[in-house]
Amino acid sequence: MNQQHPPHIDVRQAAQKEQVLQGRETLSNYERLVDVSQGLDANHTVDWTARFEQRVNTSGERAAWLHLTLATQLHLVCQRCLGWVAVPINVERDFRFVATEALAQEQDDDADEDVLVTRRDFDLVELIEDEVLLALPLVPRHDVCPVPVKLAAVDDDFEVAQAKPSPFAALAKLKGRP
Ligand SMILES: [Zn+2]
Image (cartoon, rainbow, N blue to C red):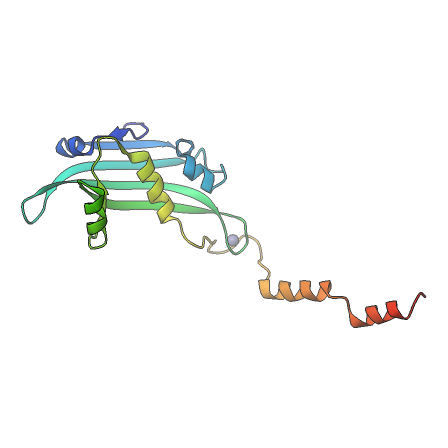
């Protein structure tokens, strides 16, 4: 397996050559992903494979396709206990390339695959980052939190009770000094 950082790619050429690119590298190469876990995962690896190919549609037209798989793991803040939780990320997606942004927008909603615009300097790094970010859970949580979690509602009541001075204490103040 090649150990490489994704280069910029001429999509049409890559599809014609049925180019397959593979990499295993640390997340430190992916700025936006390092930010998500506040630098905690910079030394974790991401494995990715990008397979470009041409496919012919029912009307006989050739189009460039990309089959992307990637696997990594990120630490996110558990929304129950606020500790770090390791979240495995596995993505497997198909992308079809079209000539213009207008075509991509027109076709993206109806297609099962994602529709992207053909480029000579297609940025695979950006795509890998986008796909990992899209795959993150909206509410990351441990299956079982490592620490017992207090019920938030009970805590709130407790704080309100503490914050409000008791009417008897206020009365005692009005009555003057001891
Ligand atoms: Zn938790």
